[in-house]
Image (cartoon, rainbow, N blue to C red; front, side, top):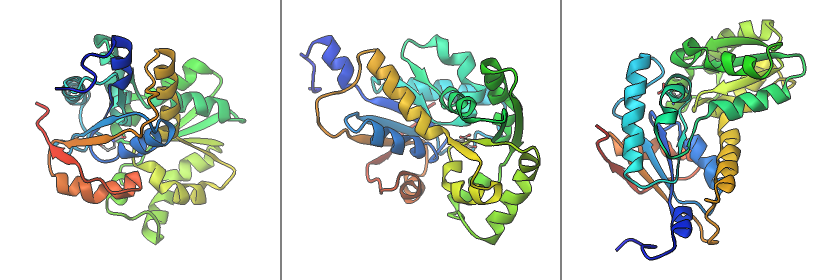
Length: 278
Ligand code: DGL
């Protein structure tokens, strides 16, 4: 029998888990923030490791994968879905968001708000996967908030494999970062959005290249705050005082996920099961 079956509906709603999905392991940067900001919440995470990377796929494909992932999380009876993937948030979320009753939070809006607030010289840089940059989603949202802001974007696809290989420092990474970021440095951005799940792990290198005067906006942190705000506004915060549990599902290769999880989450994960999302 499931726990809470005879509890009043409002209490049951609060006890439901938060669903999080990403193309793979990178979304654990968002889970780390959720655990730190909302320690009482249960979390169900799905990483689509069979079909990663999303960042080089077509819009139609990313939309189809995203719908399948949402349906999978809905079977877990989640109270809110957090889309940890910047590519999905950029490309698919605007199209699919209003087709589901459960609140769906992407990583874009919270980061955009923070960047618009942080910039002094009204010059914001955005880095992300090729699909994220091609969608122009960040530019559009920033300009909606402040049309006077100039936005400079750059696809930085090599950063994802670097992080997954554990190359977070060193000459090669620094040289690649210098090459990618030179146009943004020349454009004198004072704020840079790290528009991909993996990039917070490269923060020290990026900061070194751009200089410490540049604000780096990490969408994971902002999205944690946004989820908290929505759950609180909907009366769905779990306040039972117990530490929440996290369950992890992947569509392939749980071993690979388990090995990388530590880097993204800051702790090891044991409970990783393989499921099919299609
Ligand atoms: N999770 C993706 C993102 O944040 C990066 C990895 C991928 O390309 O799937 O855009």
